[in-house]
Amino acid sequence: MIITVGGIKGGCGKSLIATNLVVMRALKGKKVLLVDADEQGTSGDWADHRCELGVPTTWTTIRLKANAVRTEIKKMVDSYDDVIIDCGGRDTASLRAALTISDIFLVPFQPKSFDIWTTEKVSVLVQEATSLNERLETYAVINCACSRGSDNEDAKKILAKADNLKLLPITVGMRKGFSNATAEGLGIIEMRSDTKAKEEMIALHNALYGNKKTASQRQR
Image (cartoon, rainbow, N blue to C red; front, side, top):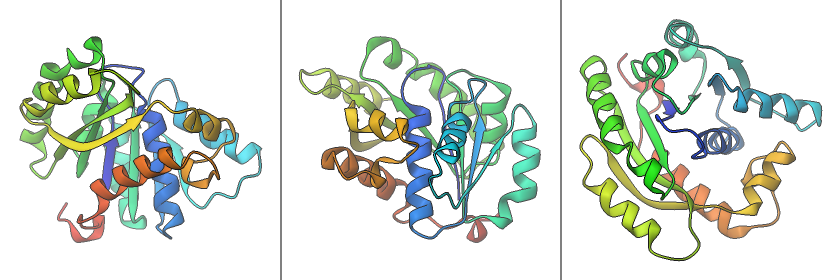
């Protein structure tokens, strides 16, 4: 299965989610390809950092951009159980290319006005992408959730009404455990601390992969 993690607003934790999903799929024994299609190169830098620290890694990481995201992944997809593409927080050629071959488009939103205001633009992007890729399913998730106040619920109410988006009943909090794991080149599931952060990421993983077919089972 191919999952693209992206959006049109930066700073909402796309690379954090992408890298954690990669670790979790790999720990389940899956052959995984991580594609860094973000001009900032965060996922690729994290993978390099993990390698430099000598942390065992069983997946492949590559960097692609623009139309190469589509053409190169199509050549490689049959060799992997899972492909996870990390795209930047802008409407780029890389993001649009990724959506033409993806099974799932996961869009993280912070529960903040600037993020939620992009909902309509994301909906239009998804509509255009679906016209080229009918199997594409798009999910929104609240990431970097607030620990108090009503911002999370307010954001969910808006996203639940958005066209072309399915809101996942999950929130991923802004937790120190995630940044600590990243600094060590790890996924949160590999850390001993922060049980809550692990539970949230496991819930997100299960929501995406629980009943989905593998890439080899889907018609391309």
